[in-house]
Picture 1: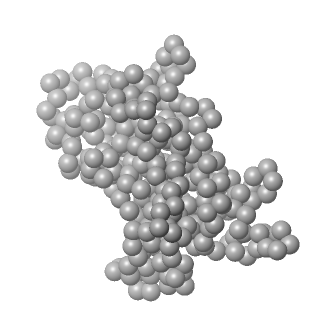
Picture 2 (picture 1 turned 90 degrees about the vertical axis):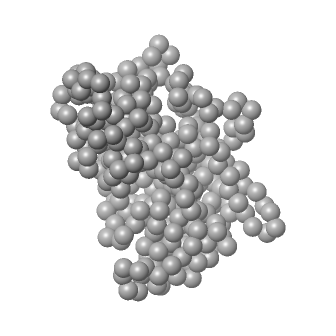
Length: 299
């Protein structure tokens, strides 16, 4: 087992869903199999517009032949392991590539940097994670739902690497996951509620909006931006209780079980659609929206 880097493009032709599966051709089978049971870093290449560089971590659970495509394989991601970085890490740092394993003996970038799947050293993995999970400008939790799970005695380091019986494991606390998820979702929505369209800042200069999971963590919802949406307190309450939901094109759906649908319509933005993030790949994924409509929304 060992750490790895998986290249993923937001405009990928492969059947990828980073929090669930990674599709790849047989030429990379041995390299991917070497990562089973361990962690990988997702990397978006510089050729992608507005590239995120190294943008997330996940743990590979198993590798299977793709049942739908001959000659292709799927790396299945361990449920709940995926986590977007709070700060996407560019390929080049102040002193050169942050992934130093891509350099050859002459200190130049080798062809290895172009490989869609490649092993990565423990030191490079740690360095990239430290940069990606650093909280230089922390977004403080709101005083209601976001703070109830905060354990002030829990370890505050962003992650921990343990060496046990010759294998390395990565521990990311739920508190850290919640803080990172809040940061990336609020940044994607410019700290604005997607339902009401309002951007409210409290007296401490913090956004009065929560980062809501579309498919909850308790129902195996991953900590990925496309499973998140920025909601103000009232909108969050209604969304969690199935009084409102979203269609795949982000039309705001109002449950017939609400006491007064007109009151609900009065707080949603005039377009009748949720405000989307600027980046297309950050939009709520239809897969998660379908789950919310089927298992939460009270039609």
